[in-house]
Image (cartoon, rainbow, N blue to C red):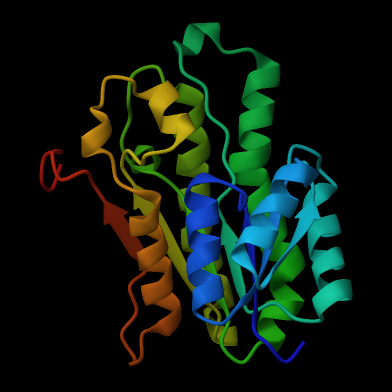
Length: 234
């Protein structure tokens, strides 16, 4: 394709869908990745310049399969957004090994191997971006979010190393760490937060649009977005 291509995991709803919509509006053909074909098809039709790849990122083989499919269908990749995520609330004493494995598979392992599989395509792109959606819990700890926090710490650490290793190829790597966003996952994890205080998914999408469109030589490695009602510089 001559048109620039973006790939967004978790792109059929929530933050991922908002990001995908923003990228379409910036002229990218945007590929949505998720588990449910029907939901993906509806989202892709709604967004217009979009396609989709059905994949369960819990499966170890999924990241390689997703990138191979993207390469075969579209021949290029200019932006990779790792947004898919799983969470669980509860004391660390209640976490099962299967729950740990599933959350880490999607939140940490999948972005790692998607980035690795996508590297040849990203190196070939005129101006490539990788944007990993982490969380405030990636550098802070919240009670009853032990596995989720651990996985986002892992994603944050990987992003720092990955950014350094691919910098010589001109690939720009960014980490976005939001506080509470108005998604179903956050409503389940943090029912104590008032709905009108939550960050809107479109606010995260605006940051992605800023990243891929801004001119100049300056680079912002990490975006931390808190709720306005949260404590400043906490």
